[in-house]
Length: 434
Image 1 (cartoon, rainbow, N blue to C red):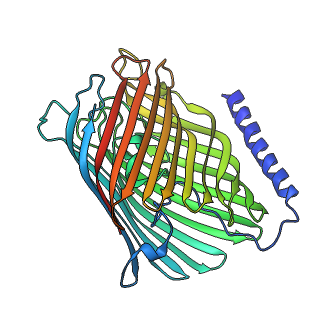
Image 2 (image 1 turned 180 degrees about the vertical axis):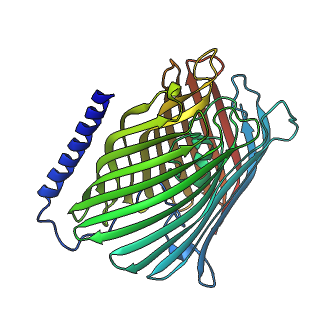
């Protein structure tokens, strides 16, 4: 145990040294720098995809951005099983964003939901119709120029991150443990309830952020992928503006994961990184560091190792938006990590998601998305690689009504028998956007 502790100490000392070098290099930074950037992962989908406030529906003091879709769905493997069974059904979607605020406070309500219904199929031939949603409330309060408080409540229902990828058109999530995000064969839907609170303080040219979150997951009856549980996380982030558009930071977090024995664990994570902010075309962060999770049951084994990631958005043109995120995290799973085994194990999950929105012409809009998730199971030879690719296009028949076609491919390649599958899904119908 002594060598491991020494290695962690060296990594932590190296992180502080790198941060110190960055701070020293920026000793003469300008005084009028931006405020504290957010802790990525909790922002809701943007209220308006194009950012034009004039496209909102004014209701009293609120600006409302409604949208809907209705059409036909053709899915080659809606149950995500090793042996596919195509189905034809109905696809319904609704999204809503509403904003209300002034210079001191701002309230945002957001909701994006989709339902896939395939009549004619009955239990136990399938896992049921798919309903996914992300709905929440975000409150920001700025009592002073150098101080901000943020609170957010969020409800998400999904089978995995790919299933919800095309719903909210948003690549962020509020699941710090990463449990339940990776696609698997024969998935079971779960409900996720998340609450976060953040305080940001600006000390020109530095900033400090402290945050806490509670994330609870409740799987539908019959789930064997992972048990229901709650994750408690505390985060502290200190940064320094090197230039008006770039900053360095050190972020540390502690967490407690109450999944019950044998999956309960406690851990920490320390990363250093660089960020781009201000008013530039590029916004985002890249980081690297170390994470460790110690399970309550020693037989599972401690999950520890290097972590890295980043998230960014790029707006080179008014009609083009590019967003991407990558993250490696240590989690846990309960299921079949290896043939002839049925035990809990630690996992290391690397996630990459990217999306591009492009307004080709006033009447044409295209959306493309791609994602890859690689899961490595500790103390097991099992490895899962999951990827998705999607494309969609909308032709505006009238100002608010369009003809929309969407296609998404999902595939999981596992070295464990009966854990691989492929799925192709297509929807076509009418979309509405105020």
